[in-house]
Amino acid sequence: MNVTSKKNELIKWLSSIEDKTIIDQIDNYRKHQTSFDIDKEINTAITADELKKRTSDFLKSLEWKK
Image (tube, rainbow, N blue to C red; front, side, top):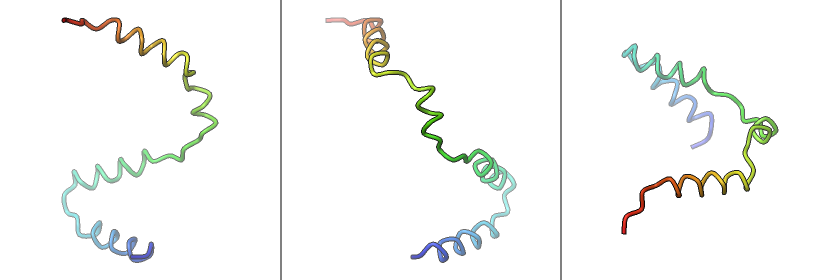
């Protein structure tokens, strides 16, 4: 199925929805869609060393019973 057919199928389905809650949920989903900005994500990412430290700290905090 090509993209145009899928779009038309979705439009027909969306037009048939009567429930306000579902329409609101779809609208909220649409509003929250953003493009992925890799440069922005990299600036806020943690390093591999920080990940290793956090994972080790978390594992050490667990109660290990033998």
